[in-house]
Image: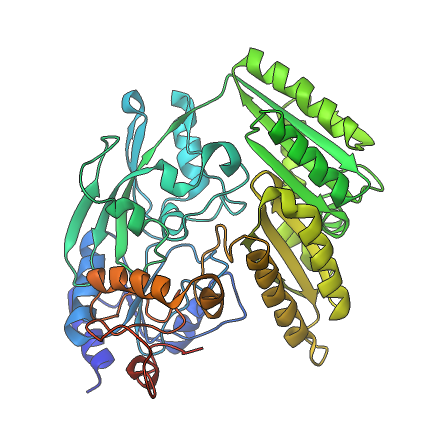
Length: 486
């Protein structure tokens, strides 16, 4: 009997057939996350209902040395929740309880499957909200946000998920349950929370999250500005930040992204715009009034031919609807597309966008650009038609070339989507061998058997206990099918 078969027997006995999926047709539901270019049918799926179920599943995997992968809503865009054909996929989407809202201490405790926007809706009556707001916030889970250290449009002012997590309950790769941090603002000792947030499920599985709640602002103003070019919009962005104004968000879309959004949701952005900026300001009413005047002045000084201020929540929602729908909207103008995610210094925006345009033209591929202009987080959408011979390969080349441009301009291969299975091959372009060795030493401390989401993040996985340095011959994890060596 294979190790996976033994684990299947154990979990069927412990959890029952309602929570353990073995039918191949049902297993195919979970073959990929939001990055559909990678597909693997899992060997087994466990539908966890609470932390005990997660611990039971992980303990069985640890005993049988069977790899496991955690999955939330499946909205990830880097293949981070890609399952293993010979492994177990532990699905957390039924764990959706908001356990506690402690408004007095600006804290909430939630299950990992709680939808991001649901927490904000639950805390708004008390005058609070959950600040991290990925574009997928109406469907993505907070556990997934923790795994990927998700950001969102408002991360310019409020930071990423890591800035809003103060405690985690975790099932370790050995199947043990531990609590790290809590409601206190600064627990002593090593920053294990910092290691776990953004670790993409490679250090264990989160079963509860204690988060920091943010007070609802007294005033919010949203500005839509139309520019003739992305250069002008980028110059306005730099001018706003240089003036000492830190908006809650500064988002940019180019002409192709605007075209897609108009076809999808009829957002009514300025006609003829080569780029638009969505600038949102929040805070005390007096502060916002002064900042609004500064934003309008810098937009007009840098070529904005039309500016609008949302008159109410309905107009604000329509402005944001175009930006929030951008990823899905490109399906209106292209049968297939790849979503990329990289970061550059904000001042390099004009130069890098020109380089992306040159790269796309060279490979005969269209690229729609949507990004968090305020912090230089790019989300290029590489458009192609998979029915056309060679089109997918050209799109992949352009997507990879964009990451290399980010690195060459002093940036990063990911801002908020994670490395996952998609970007592992680019890690050595950004980090030295010593850097990667140090990172993997941390991973080995948590997961010495390399069974927690194996094959993700690192291009050449390290066997815990092996001597550092260059390996000769085939890597044992590659031979076992647990990793791909690039």
